[in-house]
Figure 1 (cartoon, helix red, strand yellow):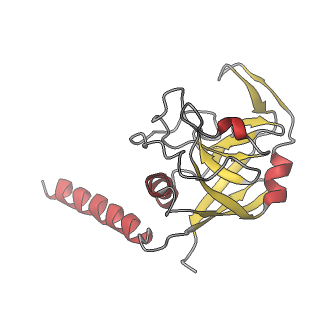
Figure 2 (spheres, helix red, strand yellow; figure 1 turned 90 degrees about the vertical axis):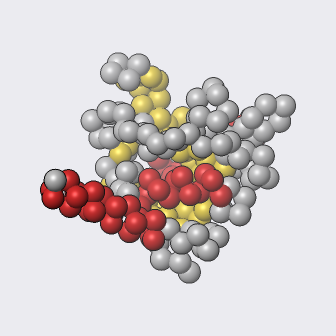
Length: 193
């Protein structure tokens, strides 16, 4: 019984520490991605996409994006990651996020957005960088893909990622998987400015 109590106390303490790391008053938090191709820093927009930003930051501060790969790269379109480890095994997901694509932010070159399935409110942990102006991903008569920030440093790194060679991957059953893995070694929430 005492062991269970200690385990629960440790889990609560870890969860509390993660929550404390996410300052709800920081309206434009920044996250640093250390990748196998270089570093990228994004600034998130909590004013326009509060639910999406908070969901994303939960994955960041818990270390869930560390040692994952960018598993989908389409030249002049997107660089997508966050959902698979380096063995191409799917990572656990939390609850889906309400689609905030009508927030006025556009899927333009250098922005970061949430990936989702065909259902509009199905985004959870996967994200992508727009490697071009992708107005077809913005909302119109149907739901779009939620943009929740932009690259402020390292856009050249993302552009280099968008040009890597890809091929069909039999284990995933997908096209556009980088032949040489692009690893997201670590994602870190930076101190408030």
